[in-house]
Image (cartoon, rainbow, N blue to C red; front, side):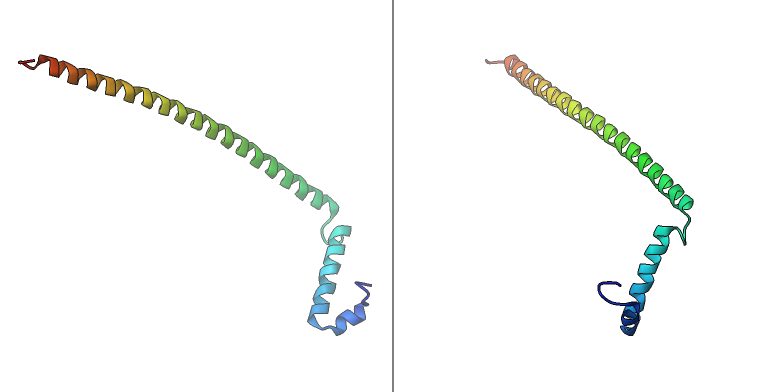
Length: 105
């Protein structure tokens, strides 16, 4: 009995009832190993678990690489800032030397 309905009542519902019966039968058949043997299902589960493990490893490698690149970018930004400060200091020094060399001052 499915939800208080007998198979005959479901079949009287037409195509929808038949579809429900087929889906229920397929779920039961797969669960009991009538369509796909349990050994095959276990192999499929193991293969899927192996794929998931490989994907997690690739994701961990990607995250490690991304964090290294972020550290490198922060270091490069700090170095660029230092170089910019040095450049501004050199420009100011050259401007002051040029002003000191002008005659009449």
